[in-house]
Image (cartoon, rainbow, N blue to C red; front, side, top):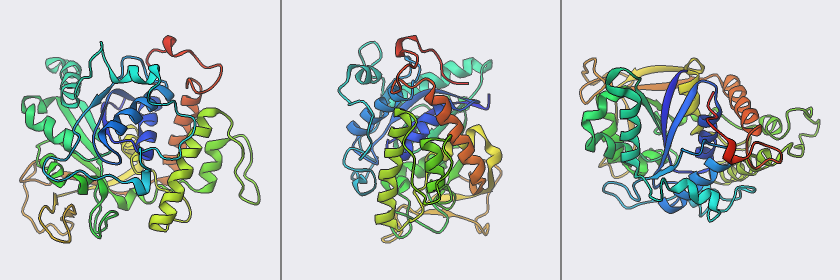
Length: 367
C-alpha cells in the first residue's frame, strides 16, 4: 500500500476521474472526499462528488464532506466554459443528484461533516498517536479547504505525510496569461499551503498537458476488446459505466478544442495526482522554491517557481525552504495503462452496470 489519502476536489470532469482512480487503484486507500468551490458552485461540486461516489461503487461509509463555498478573500469564480453550468456538463448515465442513493452520500447519521473536520478526523484516526501511518492530502481544486485545515488544526500537521496538488504552471497559465485555474481561484490559500512545513508535490500544467486522451485511448476506454478501426471511428461502449466515462471525455474534448485549441483530445489534469501517489515512478520531479503572486495586475495567481535558485533557502519544506517537489515529466503510456486498469476494476462493481454487486453488499473496494 503506497498511501492512505484524503481527496479534496471540485468535480469537474477530470476530478471525477480522480475519484474513480482513488477508489480503484491497487495500492491507494481513499479515506474520504471533501469538496470546494471551483469548477462549479459548492452546491454542484457537493452533488457531483456524491454522484461519482455512487457510480464508482465507493464503500458506503465514504461521504462527501462539504467545504468552503468561496475563496478566503476574493470573489468566487467558476468555469462553465470548460465544465458546463453544473460542473459535469454533457455527462450521460450518472444518477441525478436528488436520487436517495446519491443524497445518502451527503450525510453521515443525518448530518454533513464539514471538510476540515473530516480531514482532521481522518488524520487523527489514521496516525493513532504515532502507532499508525500518516495521511496524504490530495488537492484537485482551489486549496481553500487545505489552507483552513492547516490554519485551524496546526497540532495535526505531524499527522500529514504529504500534500499533493494539481495546480500551477512553470511559466504558463490557462485561465489568465500566467495563472492556472485552481491557483487563480484562491491564490492566498495556495500560498498558505506552500508555506506549511510539510512535503508538497505540485503537478503543473506543463505535465498535465502531456496526459492527452487521444482517440486511441478513448477507443480503449469504450471497448478494449475491439481493434482500432482504420478510419478512427469509436466503437460502442462495452458497458454503461464506460459510456458514462466516454461522454465525460467527449464533453471535455469539445471544451478543450473550442477554448484552447487542443485538437487531439483533452488533458486529464486531476487524475495525475492519484497516479503520483500510487505510482510515483511514472513521474520525474525536482525540488524548488515555489510561491504565488498575490498582487500583480497581470500575474495574480501565477506560481513562481525559482528554477535558477535565486532565493536563499534552507532544507525545510516550509516558509524559508525549498518547499515543493515539482513534476517535470510523465510516462504517458504508463499513466494511461494505469488509468484503464482502474476503469476495468471499476467496471466490475459499478452499480451503473447490470449484474454488478448491489450497493448494499459492497465493502471496501480499495486494493
